[in-house]
Length: 104
Image (cartoon, rainbow, N blue to C red; front, top):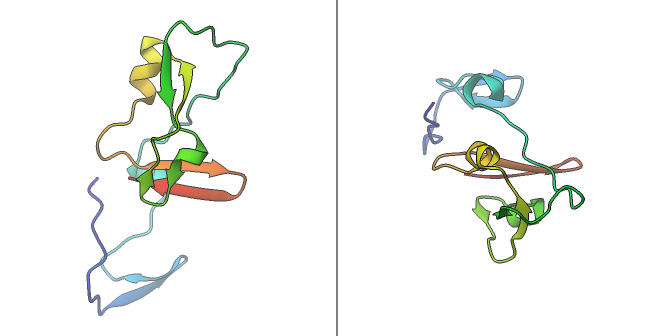
């Protein structure tokens, strides 16, 4: 699904459970428009250094950007690497307790 930008001067709004939104928008659950999956958790006990790959942590994800200057490494099988690799257009959300950061 293509995400459309908010019109520069939307003049017609409707009231929704999220507050006022442009009239042509609709409110849906994220799972209806995105495939949602949880990432892989780091386990130093299981990681033996056989296929180390860089991975993103909450500390690398900021609003609208990624900081790739300080990446840790973790073992990934070939299957896991395909499953968790970011692709153009992915929406990445990173949660730590109640704080959520999002990067496209």
